[in-house]
Image 1 (cartoon, rainbow, N blue to C red):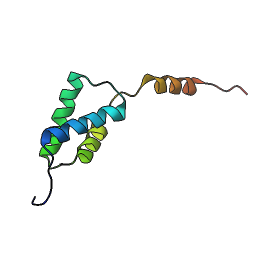
Image 2: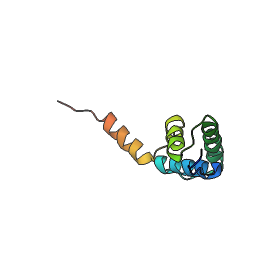
Image 3: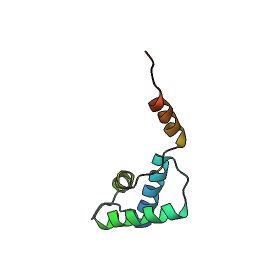
Length: 84
């Protein structure tokens, strides 16, 4: 890879995991971080080298919990009945 700057694996994995947390708007915790870091390292081992690629793969393959407000609002809308 002459002429190309390669980021250290730890920096790539760390930023990709941070982006997953940001995307799903959840607070980081140790258990989830272990799972995410292991998955990110596997993607890296499969040949994915950029933060964007690994973050996209994490977001697409490991679903996170969205904030509950949107779930409650959806339930309200879906249980509404119209009377004619």
